[in-house]
Image 1 (cartoon, rainbow, N blue to C red):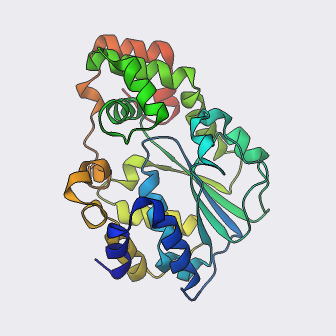
Image 2 (cartoon, helix red, strand yellow; image 1 turned 90 degrees about the horizontal axis):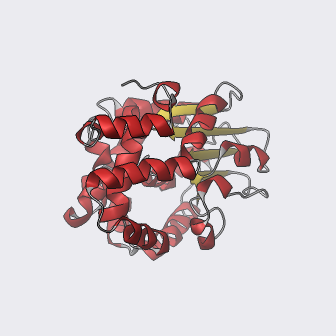
Length: 285
């Protein structure tokens, strides 16, 4: 583990953004990205924290010149209580920034002020995996906050099967399923937008897929430098053993969980709520 990884591991969470900002200011820029701004957009349970760590690494800044910004709250902690479909930041972000972890709809992203010369990418995931992963996280492992506590109270007394069925309904009613489809279609509308799958980013060839992300962003970081960044942010190098499972996605090797929770009744319930979503997103039953 390099010194950056060691420091990130011991610094309290509330100070990590300050640490990244300071480290960035002290890092000389060797090359600049081919875009004025880069935007990483996402939904829950698609590895957004991992991607944010990658783009916040000073070694990436050295070869991009783009200041990392955490876009998860879109400008304020209160935004975290607003449904993803409604989150917006019409004024946009400063130039020469790499904004990661933006929970935002494609419609609101379109309305956001952006430089003409920008690049964006969205990470998509099998929607069946999303609802199962979201359910398990929300009910059992996610750090407590107002939203999580409310949902946990609602799930109290449910079986896991009932919880997954509730999660399917929640993703439909909060328009998260629609948001996935909007972003999937956006790739055909705007060449500046690229869709990457969570399965590819966490599979056997994950490093080579990460290289494709950087190529799309026109960040010409040498392979050996990017590989060093990649290895520094593998789960075992960034968190304690106590929290390892929270970040185990990066070593999951496409170990699907949804088949363990989808019997015929749950499958029918999913199809009733999102009839063709699995196929529309490029997956299959």
